Structures are given as structure tokens and as C-alpha cells.
Amino acid sequence: MHHIQLPRNSWIYNPPDQSVSRFLSQALNLPGFVSDILLQRGFRDIESIQSFLSPRLEDLHDPFRMKDMDRAVDRICQALKNQEKILVCGDYDVDGITSVAMMKMCLPALGAEVFTYLPNRFRDGYGFHEISVDRAKTLNVSLLITVDCGISAVESVDYANRSGIDVIITDHHEPGEILPDAYAILNPKCADSAYPDNNLAGIGVAFKLIQALIERKILQFPVPQLLELVALGTVADVVHLTGENRIFVHFGLESLSHSSHVGLKALMKVAGITYGQQINPVAIGYQLGPRINAVGRLGIPNQALHLLLTRSPEKANRLADQLNQLNHQRQVIEEKILTHVIDQIRASELDKDNFIVVSGENWHEGVIGIVASKITEMYYRPACVISIKDGVGKGSGRSIPYFNLFDCLQKAGHLLIEFGGHQIAAGFRIDPKRIKEFRHACSEIARNQIHPEDLIPKIEIDTETSLPELSFESVKSLERLAPFGLGNPKPRLLIRNLRTRYPPRQVGADNAHLKLVLTQNHRSVNAIAFNFGKHIQDIQASSCMDVVATPEINIWNGRESIQLNIHDIQPIRI
Image 1 (spheres, rainbow, N blue to C red):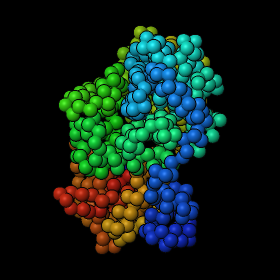
Image 2 (cartoon, rainbow, N blue to C red; image 1 turned 120 degrees about the vertical axis):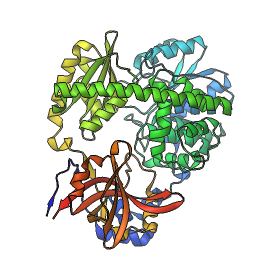
Image 3 (cartoon, rainbow, N blue to C red; image 1 turned 60 degrees about the horizontal axis):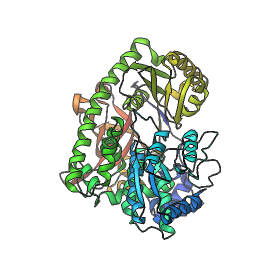
Image 4 (cartoon, rainbow, N blue to C red; image 1 turned 45 degrees about the vertical axis):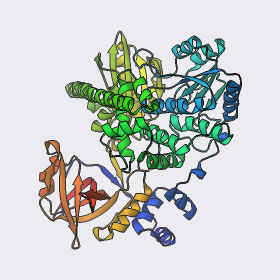
């Protein structure tokens, strides 16, 4: 008996302690494989599991545990008392746009005169710049609040201070060695933040400021309505869906499915989401998020902001249609650049490096981040895509789990004009003459840090089960672990020695996917294997197979059935 060699991932499985699992299973009345999954996710006691399985708004942390929260709230109160004008500056992605929208919904409810500013990515670049301060000066603003940006804007904050404008920074990006001299800095990633959860998205930090105003009885606002925006920004920014983010997203998604928000309802309609249907993070990641992001990528983020703020259903429908068209435009542009990038990688054999750096003239800067993401996914290597325009290279990078991209850019920082970002995603500007040198430096850093096994995609298996164990009741109990995302991935179960009841068949566009009926011990279950269509012959040639899959409840024509969503297959020939 031997395994057929499919291009495959490395399976990592360390079985959980069965005695602890059995205890939890009995104490909490959970199927054995569900308690196995909880153990693998680091849960060891009944109390923490109960709070994970049943998120509560009361479990949100006290916002005043965040350093400078008192100062920020007091300064807003002072602005209200003195009738000062406030400018809210955000970033042009979903996280930034939803954060600005939330501030613009809440602060005027206090009687404040509030203006908003979203940068144009082509004219202003990423983050908080002096142009935002100039806008504040023009509007005679004396308090400026940043959301999802500002932590590295040392010079811009100095400029605001010289202009007599106080700045409250709310951000979640990695702070540099020198912090801006702002009136207040709310960022759980700052070393002295003292806040218990540092995984918040930009909108999560902005929400903590709103929560503080609500707790001080300064503001009254229905929290579930706010959490719709918080869930949208949190999921779209791909932060860990654990801790407070899990609570935000759990309640935000619940509220979103029957939202009274006219802009979000219009957006859901054009994205093909039925009103009243339970929304999951995948719907945000692939349907709602990209449509909001598209306007920022194409340089007109205010259209998304207007959609989130309008109260007119007619205007909402018109704006949602525009976002939909812009998203389609973005997809066409992205596809063209991706083709150029793949051609360049193949021609120069760049995939032989541990770090891929590609560049091109006049590539649309708005989509190079998505292209970098796709290259990282295809070649399983960190990748940077650089667009050269008017003598400047603008780059966007993405990374794999075992390589810190932000650290890498810091080490190669002497070759860059500026940079910023996270461990897995970053942006930068570079002199085109230094791109070759930059590629070499990044390759060297990657060669020293990335081991050959790091370049094989890994599938971490939660536990092993069998088809007879997958009853409707046990599969439904898996849904209690949702919402799934970074930090709380979909459960991955190993099921061995499965046979196909009928020959597998290719489905979908270009026959990309496989539909199978798998059987074991007289039990049969339908399965779908996305992007496995090209491996149909290997699978047909096998006698049986081991699979890693997530069991799901599939609803078709009102009928429910169990379906395996297959992540990987290891065919076996006896």
C-alpha cells in the first residue's frame, strides 16, 4: 500500500490528550471531536470554554484599561464644551473607512461639528499626512482624531501641534521606536499600553473610544448597530478572531443579517447576500469587503463612506451599484497585472528565491497588494510587487506564517524611502534604481531565516474522526466554534481510509473542483474538493484515500445534508 504523490501540503497532527478531552466532553455535553478541537485551540478549563462558546458583550474589557483613554475622553469633552470643530482622518481600506463612518455616526450625536478626511492613495499615499492637517486648518478645526493610522506620523503630528491642533491617535499598526507627540495615543500594540488584548483592528480601537464615551454616559448609541461596522472592518482587516474580536464579530454578524442600516442593506443586495440570511466572515471577506476596498484601491474612498453614512435608500442603492461596478473594474485590472507578474516570475525563475520581488511600469498601485497576496498564495513565499510611476516605486508585500515581513523591511530599511505595516502585510516606497539591491537584500534575509520546510504549506489537523461519528447533531455543534478566521480557523478533521462510492466528477468553471461521494463503514457522505479538479486521474487511480476536511451542513432546495469541505487529499493505492 503506498500513497500517490499529489502536490501536497505537510500535515501536522499532534493528537490531543484523550483523558482531558473525555472530561471536557462529558462536563460540557460536547461530541468528543469538538472537545478535541477546543483543546487544540488552547482551552483547558470549563470556564474559558463556556465563555468562548457563548460570547457576551459583558466580557468586553474596560476601555479605560487602555493607556491615554482618560486623556482622549477628557479632550473630546473639552471640545464639546468649547464647541470646537473635530476632524476624523482615516485610511482608505475597509478598516479605515468603517472607522471614520462610525466616528461620524457617533460624535455628531454629542452635538459636535465633525468633518471627515480619507486620503487618496495616489495623491496622498498611505496613512496620516500633513495634507490632513492642512485640511484641518482650512476648516478651522482644533481637534483631530485619527482612526486606523497615525502611529508612525511623527512629523505630521508635530506639524499639527505647531498649527495649534491637538491630535488623538487611534491605531493598531506596529509602533516605531519614536512615538508621535500626540495629545493621546490609543494603540494596544504600544509597549506601555497595558491593554489585555493587542489583536484589535483599527475599528476595534476606535470602538473602544466610543465604548468609553458610552460608559461615561456622555454618549447614548445602540451598540449592536455599531458592531455591524466593527465586524466588517475587523474581518476585512484579517486580524485574529479571538478575544474581543470574537465578541465584536459574533454580535456584529448577528446584527448584520437583519440590519436596518440602509447602506449595508444596499451593499448586501448587490453582493448577492439575501436579507435575513446568517452572514459569516467569508461573506465579508469575499463579497462585502472587496466592494468597499475597491473604491479605496481606485482612489475614491469617499464613495464607500457616503454609502455607510447615507440615510436615503435611493442614494444607497445608487452608491452600492457604483461600488459594484468599481469592484468589477478592479478585478479586470488585477487580472492583467497578475498575468504580467507570473510571466516575469517564470522568465527570470524568481520562484527559486525564498523571497519574490517583481516590478513593472505603471501597474495600478491600488491592486498590487492583492496581486502580492495571490503570488504569496501560489508560490508560498513572501512576495513584494512594485509599481514604478514618475520615478518612484510603490510596493506592497505579503508574507507566509513563519516570516516577519515588517522586520525584513526594517532590516532593508536603508534601501527604502519609507515603509510601514504588519508581520504579514506591508507597504513601502523605493527609488527604482535600488529595486535590484532590495531584491538581493530581502532574498538574503529570507535565506537566513526561512528553512526549506517553511516553504511547504502546512495543514494543522485538529483531530481524527470517522464518518459514522459525523451525525447532524455533532456537525451542528461545530458551528458553536464560529465565527472562523485567523486565529480560529475552520476545524480540520482527519478521516482515514475512505473509498469513493461513485467515480469523482469535475464541476465548476474550467472543471476546477471535484465532487465526491465518500464512504466508510456503510456510511456515505457528499464531499466537495475545491481546486482539485486537475488531480482527478490520481484520485480515480486510488483504492482509497485519507482526507483533511471540515464537515458542514449543506442546505440545497430547503433540504439539509452533511457535506465534507475537503482541504487536502492523500490518495492511497493498495
